[in-house]
Length: 208
Image (cartoon, rainbow, N blue to C red; front, side):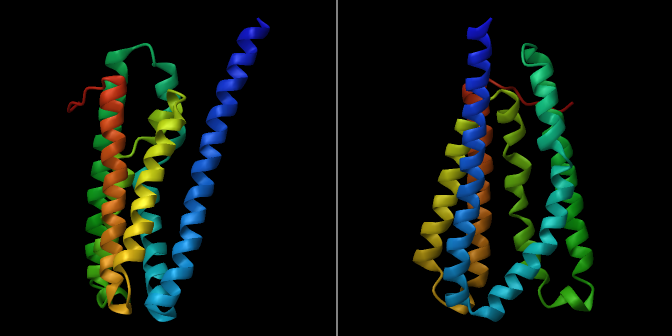
């Protein structure tokens, strides 16, 4: 009995540690990039980027739709039912994709307003970073209690954005390039996430 409790506590501790590492790494990357981008892009361009990014975050909340919380619960409850797991994962991906498309349509609509019209292309490009939110199944990794794999994937994608930003973003006019690198980074994260659950857990995807 005590052995079982200790093993469960160890699993919780390990996953909590990986989740903490993931959060701290994400925050650390943002701090490093902020210091660099303010100097390279200038305070005006960086301020524009942070304003547009804050708008996008609202739409990413819609795309996520709380899946990181209750989808993990569904995975835990059905982890021994392969067909049910496939159904849950496929359904979540479809719903998130629909919400992502809806968000893009909302961005296109916002572009008609004077406040956003001058920046609609940059705003739309930034929205495509949400592809990573659609594809990266952190909720699945939480459900199967394997946040180590999720942490490695996040590390790879964030390392990409740091290295490429330092290499290629060197002047204020590179703001579009930087946003493009963010999109690529998130696509890498999402793609690796889907590949990981397919390879390590033999997940099948289908239209439900």
